[in-house]
Image (cartoon, rainbow, N blue to C red; front, top):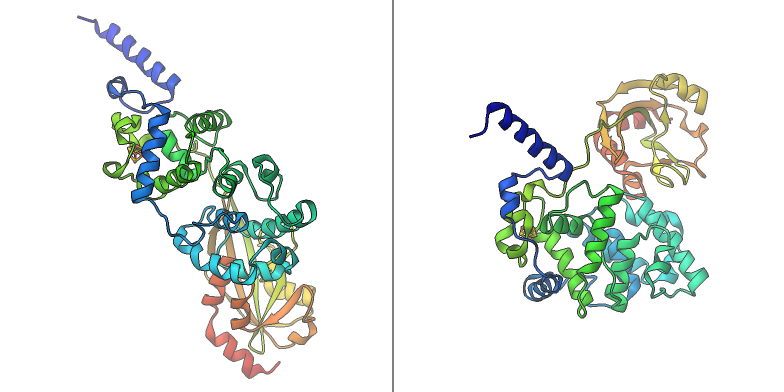
Length: 393
Ligand code: SF4
């Protein structure tokens, strides 16, 4: 029998061993867990499952057109399938191929993207289309590395395009696939960490099937999106028998979350200036957040709305009203928007054209505007627009 001091020592040793392995699961369960099955089995099981249970009728499937596949892959980044479908269809109606997209005005592209979020994707699409025309004569290169040179195309996106369009054997590793692999193979560590990511890439490459790359790629995507979700439905999973996280009873422990850190908060003030029923919007510079989109004039949080109106636009503000703060989350920070609505009686002093425009509520809503501006349009006091009409400039 161990002494109490001996037990404590043994406990400390076990704790250190667990910390070293970065696995937050019971040691006994880990011991009992069987290693994952053979790579060939993993791919074969997924391919067979996809044929029967996967998604096979999405608008961007059943085509080898690299342009359509590329567009869908970009739209699907951080966005659900159901949200993407109507945007995808409308986008294709306006820009059916690389040449039409390259020739389009960026603002027209952003307008069609409005509401889909992450607008840098739309700007990169436009830049990439121009690069495809200029460098590749409008055709898609067939190699992953060449595609990766395009703006907005990362390794996983490039791999998906060449797998679907050209049947090239390349591994994908988007967020969903990272989750599947981290669980199935009980990969310890935060997948955003470079070493863990490298391990996952190696693993993803080792699993590639000798045949059926397109269906296998789709199977991984489908499994991550419909079965191995945040709360997995393991009973429906085709590779459950070899899943280590499941064997350990620890599916919730994988993938490891991002190490905690506080998200910085930034404050800004936006001016909702109304003149004769129209709102003043400014086009933002191409670089930075919401680049190229129409936005309400932004001022410093310490600045006073009426004073800035006068100094920046030469406008006299009346009926100044502070609206409730609107928080908006970005990946790396939270922006707290303090909206200030006010009526101005001499709006014609601000030129309509170039980087500033007076827009009706309807015109603004139909233009390329970021999500918070859309929310502010919804919250604009109706009385302010009416009052402005009565003021008559
Ligand atoms: S068994 Fe569960 S946790 Fe494991 S891969 Fe399948 S769905 Fe994911």
